[in-house]
Image (cartoon, rainbow, N blue to C red; front, side):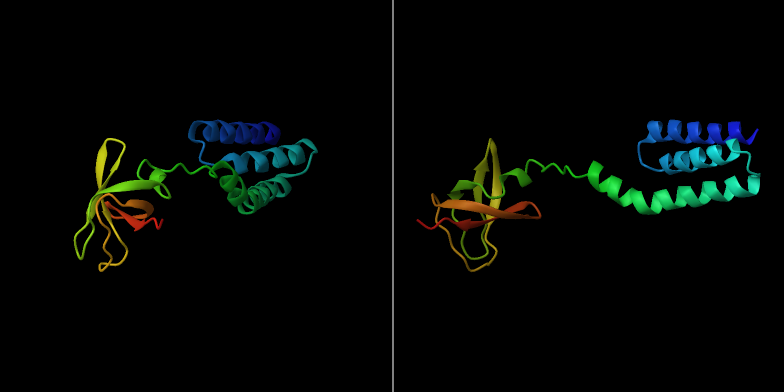
Length: 143
């Protein structure tokens, strides 16, 4: 009887994992398989029930971080972030406490420097260093 209970636990954990794909229940499938083997070997319930919990917990604690890092290693840049490091022509000048603008594709973006005192004339080539709020932080390309 315990053999079928653990088979059901392992199968249910796998089905739940396939439905959610959040790495929540797959560990219980591993524990269920170990408990099923112990139950199939004829051991009493007080061996395979704790084994289920111990194996499930060990799998979760030791492998979840590793598996999540392998699955989530692809971070896509947003459209705004994709222009960091690229050069643009400054459309309007940047002066003391006044932001300029650059054209990225068909969109005009506010561009400013990291320091309020920096000035960059219109028509200068700038490179995008970062995004701060809704502004691109730029520096002038020295020729």
